[in-house]
Length: 107
Picture 1: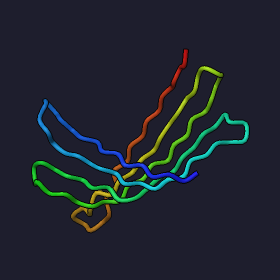
Picture 2 (picture 1 turned 180 degrees about the vertical axis):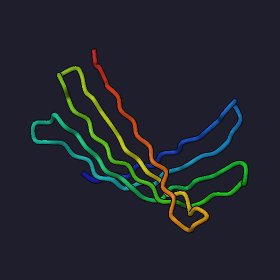
Picture 3 (picture 1 turned 45 degrees about the vertical axis):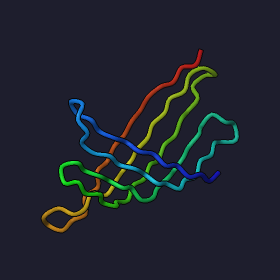
Picture 4 (picture 1 turned 135 degrees about the vertical axis):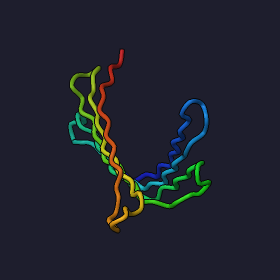
């Protein structure tokens, strides 16, 4: 069903604060009738702060993900995310993409 997810990701290269992005997403999650595949989609504004400019920009971001149960104890998952990042010098919109994949074993 529907949900709200607020998540903040901070960056500290070499131990010094560099930036933070806070997502304020509305999403929907569900699973197949047999329960072997779970999925979600979420999106909304992202508040991106940079220490170098001491400025906060409002961007748009979103995520789509799923997990698949291989066995009762093992699941594989993946996520694709994107966030707007203003425009380049030609005036084209920039989107920064990310992805992750993994496995979770429960014992």
